[in-house]
Image 1: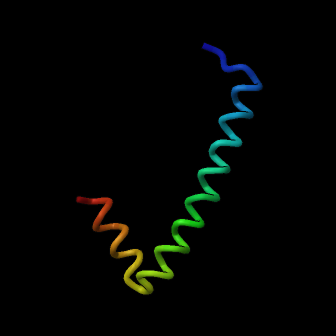
Image 2: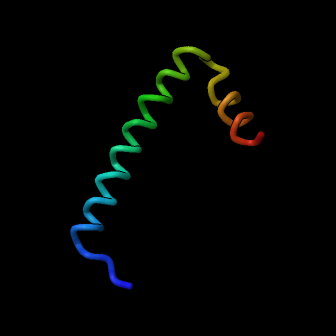
Length: 47
């Protein structure tokens, strides 16, 4: 099944938006948790 060019562009834009949101959320987590942010993220991810 071939994806339309418009669909591919829409998906690419969605990925960029998600990436920017991820960065914002990560900054919020590091602001709240400081040096423990990465450890907390991994613990939650693995639970």
